[in-house]
Image (cartoon, rainbow, N blue to C red; front, side, top):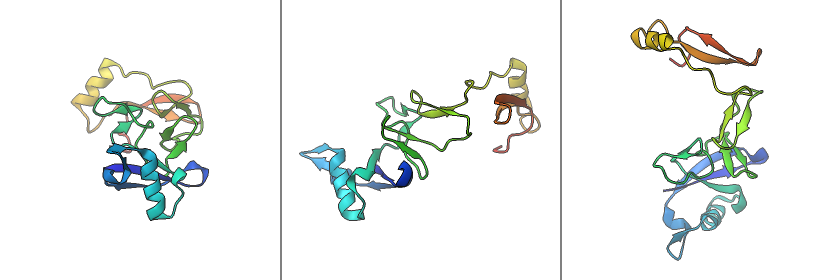
Amino acid sequence: MAHFAKIGENEKVLTVLAFNNKNMLREGVEVESVGQAYLEKHNNWPANLWVQTYKGTHFNQHISGGTPLRGNFAAINYQWDAANQLFWPEKPYASWVKNTTTANWHSPIGDAPELTAEQEAQNISDPQTNKWYYKWNEDTGAWDLTDALPTWA
């Protein structure tokens, strides 16, 4: 199954379509431009605004150890970065910066600090009441340590 992202204004991903790989073959070899031409013909959208993406690529790593394709599997509202040939997830905070190595956004001061062994042990022993983690604070530009249950829990 081949996947292509439909690129709109401001290089935003509008949708991702999947179709049979046979629709992008030239002499038995998959060719992106053949897939783009097929999509232009059948979707009335310019070929150059269809960009191939691979479901197994996340944060510039291939899930099976192969070669990653364009940083991330595209999704609606992702940003297409033609200069770096990468799809970017939505920017989580105004201050965060692109890391083209990981194809992900990072805080301007780096990753969150590691939890202590004691905090990790508490997370494991009592996950329903304590859940130590670091949360980005955009107002202070720092990582805040909290023991409250995260909103995604």
